[in-house]
View 1 (cartoon, rainbow, N blue to C red):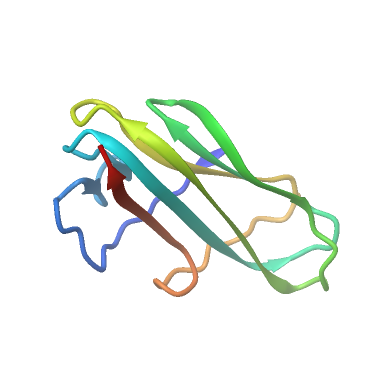
View 2: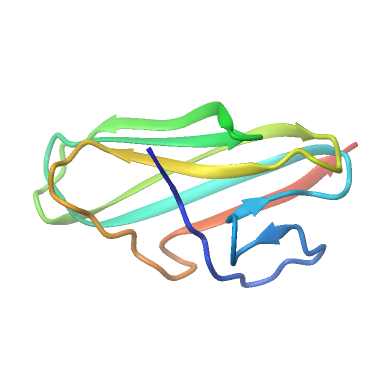
Length: 124
């Protein structure tokens, strides 16, 4: 399992996402947040297992995607998922982790339309 390094931001209205060091979302307002992650891989092999997890405070919180792909070898593969998570507004944080059992190294494709993270406050 590898932490996804989302290292660029389109916007961060409350300065809660660390895109340079820890690559994590630490909201400063307590409440429920809708967390969304999408990751696109370059060419993948048919049948390779892909798993996407949201980690909260350093531990697996929810597995939001799991698939033994059946796509065309060499095609791109997207994995995505979301969860509604409560944050205390001070120390709680989340990160994205990915697993790919394919023996060939894969590249996560960059660009906000291909691989992205979002956290949206819903309510306290």
